[in-house]
Structures are given as C-alpha cells and as structure tokens.
Amino acid sequence: MNPAESGSVDLHVQYIACVNNAGFVMSFQTRRQRDGRNAGDSGNYPINQSRRIDLSELEFDGDRLEVGELVQPRVHAVLGSTREGPMVRYAPNGQTATFNVRGTTLHYSVELA
Image: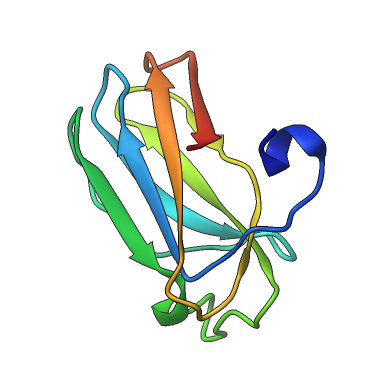
C-alpha cells in the first residue's frame, strides 16, 4: 500500500519526478502544503518521458523548504485539467519520489510509483 492509500505520509525525498504515461503533453510544478504556493516548473514534455525537480533548489516567494515540509506534484495537462499527486515530505537526502501520470487530458491520475 502506498502512503496515499494509507493516509500516512512517511516518504522523505529531495527530488520529485513525474513520468508521462498519459495521452497528452504535460508539465508539473511543486505545491507546498502549508500555504498552497507553487514553485519550480518542469516545462512541457511529451508521452514516454519524465522530468525531475530538485526540491532543495526551490523558492516559494523567497522561502526555501524546511526539512519535513509536505509537498506534492501539481500536474497540468496541456489543453486539459490540473491535478495534484500524493504528498511527500522534503529531506535533502538524494532520494526521489517518482509519480506515474496516466489517462487522458480531462481524466487522469497522478500516483506514486
């Protein structure tokens, strides 16, 4: 069971990666849970590719993440909807949380791999 299904958040990571297994071009940012602000931008990328964001380099209106802060990927389908993935916690540990994006522009999922 992944943390999103169990309701617990125990995955501590430095990087967030999203694999585009969906039927659209997409991009993603990182959303900070405590204030809903977004930072980082993967840029648009096509099917069967992935991008990774280093959380240690992000600034949310001038503030960097604190160890243990909750974040999540905020995925946008070009010409489609925007969805958030499950939460993870930030830690400068070199670990990556990989999310699989699957579906179509209006009906898709963002799940931990």
